[in-house]
Length: 383
Ligand SMILES: Nc1ncnc2c1ncn2[C@@H]1O[C@H](COP(=O)(O)OP(=O)(O)O)[C@@H](O)[C@H]1O
Ligand SMILES: [Mg+2]
Image (cartoon, rainbow, N blue to C red; front, side, top):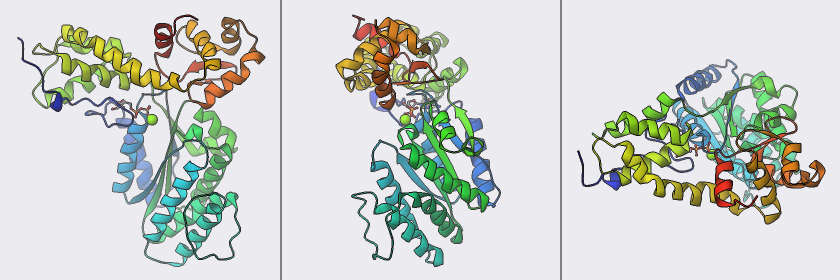
């Protein structure tokens, strides 16, 4: 059967960055574990914090948002920051910490928390705090005191603190160390702090390097692609709820095209909905959507990444892409670029800093963006 067109305004799918999907699939276990951790901390029982890792578009930010909502529901005040590199991250962290403390019901520990916030704020230009200038010396190390003092002040008020830090691989490693030191102390004192750090897979190594005890503080949830069943659920359920069906062939086509990556699932489902003329939505409809879906992926998701890459680094990107998907040895990439490893080391490091590639293990590199090798072969073919 054929329909006029499905209403684009009713299109339930949500391709984007951090845009909550209509059906958040495959994350129930992580959400349940986090919920238990939140409640344990509130009951003065310790628990591990959480590292959420994965490639771009796998659903880290969305999950972080979900867990933050869970935290608020469980009696936590949430400090939610996306690390951008530079002091902006810390500035935002301090502003939110300060706002939370100011809204607390007085208490001796509030003054103390404000003083440690001021002490760190004075090391960061433009934090915009105006505390009565007491005998506070600027001290960035006091960031760990900010964590413990803010949590202690909140605990006096029956509240917990949740730190939800996105793109955490971009945070200065000294600041990571200071935050973890504060969190570690909260754990020893039984104070209700729950930290969720989300980032690219190399975040696990960054955290491990920050302190000897850091690895043991965290559970790692490494988000991989969704299973075929989960993709089908993500596609079919939201449509069903508004009376629209997909044929099994059509949802299978999305499984194949997306390789299970949530961003691709949302993009393909979204464009298929808008292009569809069959009822139920058919595999032919998925094909009809291909030009728009591919164009959307190329011009937003992929191009946004490559746009920031200077020409000098593009050759490295092309060399890596020429080796196909998956991780590759740094030496092989250099060879593919007709260079030696030391000659390309600076490009490699900058691309890691920019989050285009990451090092899954020492001496190896991989694109941090799924299907990026195919994109480069398509868009920048003269490798
Ligand atoms: N569990 C999920 N099920 C279905 N779609 C998801 C899921 N997680 C994320 N998405 C979708 O994937 C896209 C990318 O999510 P995002 O959280 O921004 O990824 P990341 O932060 O890892 O780059 C969004 O369009 C979002 O709606
Ligand atoms: Mg994200």
